Image (cartoon, rainbow, N blue to C red; front, side, top):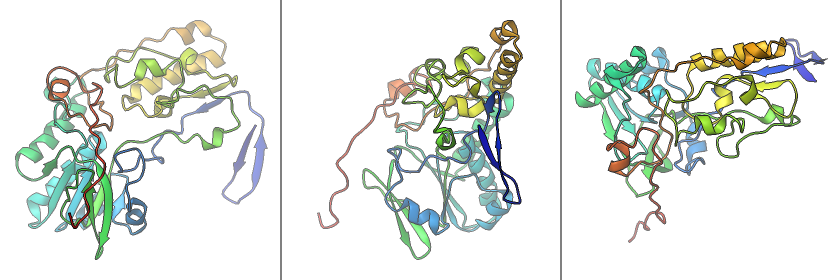
Length: 315
């Protein structure tokens, strides 16, 4: 049973045989706080308009010229934002860009570069690294955001180890996304408690075990739930795992539609070769050089450093 509301506000109830939920995760951003929870003051910063969770549009990028912008995150969205903002630094004096990574070592945060089987994806890493190497962007590593302090229309980021960044005119937090499961609360879902992905799929996409190119082919069987006829596909099927590629979603949908059509042979015949060497790191703090730079891979389990907070100001 599905309830819908049309543009005129008229509610309608539909009885359907199957539901393919491809609603994605774009509207459910992760917080900038390092522990999966909003940093102290993060909500206030967002309400004040000095914190956003999506890469800036070209119009927004132009409006940030001459100010200090902090980008938090290490994925493709962060790289895209860095590339666009670095172009402003070249043309508008006084513009400053800080790029905040939670990981303690850069490692392979820039991805596979020229070796990436997807050239456009590799180019993101090459161009963002060049922006750092050219001095257009200040790269800050091992910075786990604990607090955001509003000061005279700007925001100061404070890390768990008490470091502070200069006041920023805008913070762009692109630290990943998670699925919205609220409207499926009446459905019988079988989800992994950590990744929030279907339990049969979760071991195959766990970023601690797999890179972007080592995810095994999968389809309707792995995406099914105890609620007959319900399938989560696309980025939403990956839950909180950062290893999703669009071509995976296309193959998922083909398999699911074949299953719904009764062609179980076609549904089981999943053939997909994923390009490797992409960025697929999570939001943890990778502080072990042996793990991040010595062959551990971009999805090596991070080493978490714990602290008991900052010392009092008077200390």
